[in-house]
Amino acid sequence: MDELLQQAMPATLQEALLKTGGSQMDMYTGHLTPETIFEEIIAALQQQGIDTAESYAAHLAAGNGFMTVVLTDGSRWILRLSDKPAQPVHLHPGRYSPHSLRIKAAALKTAMAYKSAMLQGVLTGQLLTDINEVRRSAGLSPVRRLDEIRHIIRILQLIGCPVSEEI
Image (cartoon, rainbow, N blue to C red; front, side, top):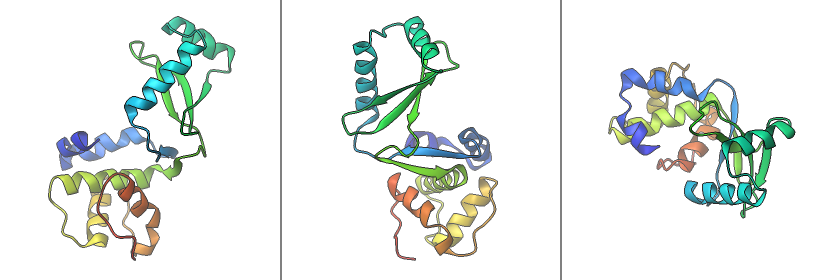
């Protein structure tokens, strides 16, 4: 994510952030790396005899279009059929799964825009000012006070931004 955000210029950031949608989502907060998550999901699929895109699609069709895989850390992942034939598995953390945080898209967009600005070295060090500037660049309305954005601060911390919880 850092590489993507470092390369996003302010002019293209809003367009890139549109891909996060406008609703809510679950963000994985556990200790498993993406590689470990993929390895465990592949192993779970293979244990069920699912080893081709066709067998995966057939299994999903028999299960209302999705399946759930529980990983070694107890997190639940939902698998669906991707719209990309070369990558048939679409996955995301299950709603209210262990090691996940339910977040609004606007909060994630703010955090991603903030991290992009941080990586590009354009933050002023004034948290409220910086938050409102990145929200403006992301096409979002400003916030009046820092106590309105505790959830955004939590997301910033999760994605590696050094911000204080003290408001």
